[in-house]
Length: 304
Length: 304
Image (cartoon, rainbow over all chains, first blue to last red):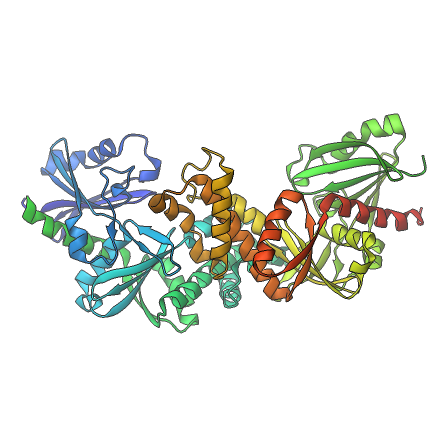
């Protein structure tokens, strides 16, 4: 049972835990995100793994994400850029809860191309995981793109993160498509074809590089051109993703990127990248986060 | 009592009515916007002016704004650009409610510089009102800027609106400052000095023209540089207004604009315009809307 570890990604909106015996996943469980807890993080985590401790004798959990924030299970201070995997592993935060060893990955802090301060928690685990899976990604200059609520573009040089930029794309799309006046009766009907047409039109509008000017078309096209709410939702998705890709590709001077994330969203980014002649190699987000957590766990094991 | 007219601006969020005897305002009243009615628009309007009808014998109301939309008191179809004041007056919608004559200004529809369809309801009354007050604004090329929830930039040539652009600036700022994850405990403390510093920094960031890249700094500056929620709110205001001004000035090639609106918001726009070497002449919004409604009423009077 020496290799029995629970690996987890605990973000703002969701906890995902997998119980592993070496390379084999035995069980998995989901729970609430750090942003929506009814009990303390420690109680929540102990509850989530209680049955694995009782039935399997689990004694070790390795986590990434907001679990390491000030409001998480134990604060793991940010590693400063330029940050290599060794710097990162060295700053792992550790706490023992009722006899359970919990190790939490630190986030990374840096300066964005604009000169603004920037932070990540969780994406660094995917980037280091990708490098662990594909050692050639730890060589030379590489740009990683991680779509999401707070999407990241991250430049690495010889395996060290040197700078990165957070894009509010996912959160902005959610606000605009559910809380704004732009979608008239948009909750009414799903229509994949209308949404795809709107997405393509939004990508096209993003080429001009004037996001704020372009937003109102989501509404005016419904009023004046008979477009549906589904079209408008697709338009907002294409406009925001297309704008992120335009700004990101310019800031990072990227002609080729490593795209890490879930399939459906990744496909939209791949389309937007392709429209700007940026090549991409797509990697699965869950595989990368697991590889990153294993990398962290393998070094930590030597300390105990 | 021949000159007794109630003039009103009935937008999405508020109804403002003034009772006038010629140039003299006798009374005023406020009510709910078209977007938040509990009764029908007709019932709401009749309720708002009931006392003026009973006590003063009011028989005529002239309105601008969302009062003329599909969900308003009577639909006033859009006038198409290029739209002069005569086209606009000619398309006034009229309805008689329980013996009360209600005239509603039509909105204007056009094509934005980007090629997208665009619409306005209410701002045209302010633009035509400004031209009535200052006839030189009805000559040559003029660019009008009307800040707001859905702010407008509008180009007129010899008194005819030729094209305009809606900016979601006000609504976007409201979403970001009250519904997003960007402001950590921002509701806690007002601080005018922090807000002003943040506003200046946001204007500076807007110069780079990458709105989506710049948004996350509102949060990261709180996490990494000890900035307050008030600073972050000011930053978001400066960033969004600065971006509107940059995009608007480029699209309309404007070196001088007529700024129409309320004082506090107008001052922020004036600062943002000045930072980009765009001169402005500021006019009060309420004065302009009243002048526009009078212009409409004076022509309509001949029809009855």
